Image 1 (cartoon, rainbow, N blue to C red):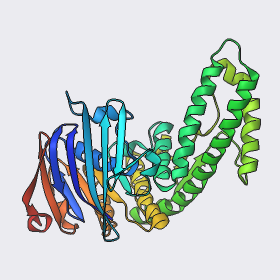
Image 2 (cartoon, helix red, strand yellow; image 1 turned 45 degrees about the vertical axis):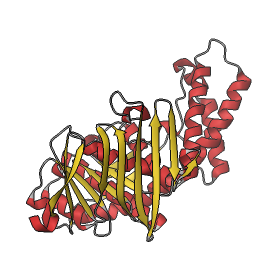
Image 3 (cartoon, rainbow, N blue to C red; image 1 turned 90 degrees about the horizontal axis):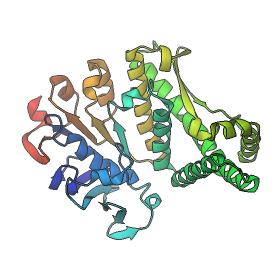
Image 4 (spheres, rainbow, N blue to C red; image 1 turned 180 degrees about the horizontal axis):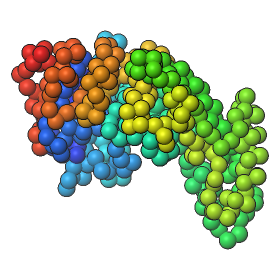
Amino acid sequence: MYLNKIELHNFRNYSTQDVVFHPKVNIITGNNAQGKTNLLESIYIMSLGKSFRTSRDAEMIGFNQTYCSAKSTTVKNGEKLEIEIRYAEKQKQIKIDGVAIQKNIDLLEHVYTVIFSPEDLKIVKGEPEKRRRFIDRELCQLRPVYYKNLGKYKKIVQHRNTLLKMQEIDQQVLDVWNEELVEYGSKIIIERKKFIDKLNGISKELHSKITNEKENLQINYETNLQFGSDIKEQKQYFLDALKRNLKKDIFHRSTSIGPHKDDLKISVDEIDIRKFGSQGQQRTAALSLKLAELSLIKEETNENAILLLDDVLSELDGERQTFLLNRLNETQIFITTTEIGKTLLKNMPDGFIFEVNNGTVKKLQNTIKTLT
C-alpha cells in the first residue's frame, strides 16, 4: 500500500495544491513554518478522519476560508482507492471512491498510517494522556469496534461526571451510567491488554537489537482495576470498584477509576524510565514503540502502513537513524526536514525530494540517488 497523490484546497496554508509521490521515499524540505507538517497532516487524516495535531477539525481550514478539502489516491493491492475529506466549520464529509459515508468508523481499515514526531518522543516521559493517546490511535485503526466503544465510553464519563457535580444525585440515573461505564470500559480494558501484550513482545525484541542486546525493554499495562479472565469477570471487577469509590467520586465530583486513567509502565532493566531513564533511553524506547506499531499493523492486516516522520530524524543519532531506515525497505516513508544530510540519504532507496515554500510544494529535479 502506498499513497500516490494528494489534492488540497484551503487546507491550512495550502490554497490549491496537487502532489504526486514516490511509492518508497519522499523527503519534504523547507524552512520552518512553510507547511511541511501540514502536508503530513493531510495524509494522516486519510486513516482516521482527524488530525494528529488538534481535536478541532475547523483548525485545518485555511485563514479566511469557509471550508477545506483533501483528496488522496492510494494504491492498495494493485487497485486505486480514492478518499476525499471536506471540513466546514461544523460539518465533515467523507467520500470513499466517490460514495459518501456517514461516520468516521466507516473510514477505518482503508489506509494505515503511523506518525512519528518530536511530540512522540515524549511518549515515554510525558503525561499518561500521551501514552493513552498512543494506544487509542493504533487500536482505532486496527479495530473499528474499539473506536466505537471508546467514543461511547468518553461520553458516558462526561455524563457521569455531570451527575456527580449535582447537589442531589439520582441513584437510579447513577446506576444507569455505572452500567454503561462498565459495559464499554471493560471492552476497552480487554482490547488494550491484548494490544499491549503484543506490543511488548515486538518492542522488546526491537529494543534489544537497537541497543546491541545491552538493554531489556518491558511494557506493562497499568490500570486501577483488577484484570479479569474474561469480559464477565472484568465487568464485575469494574462495577465493584465503582461502588467502593463512590464517596471519593462524589467528593471530587469526577470519575476516579476506569480506562480513562490508565497508563503504560515502560521499564529498561526493571528501572522505570518514565521517571529515571536517561534522554537516550527514553528516545530509544519511543523508537522501539513506533517500529513495533508498524510491525503490529503488518502482522494484523498484512499491509505496510505509511510512515510519516515529522522532523524527527534530527532528534535521533546516526546509529538510530540507520537502524530505523534499514527496517523500512517495504514501507512508504514521508520525511520532513529543514536540511538533507548525507547520513539521511546513504541508506535509503530512491525517492523524490520536494521543497515547500509558503504553502507551495515543488518537486526537485534531483532524486535521492543523484544526491548520494
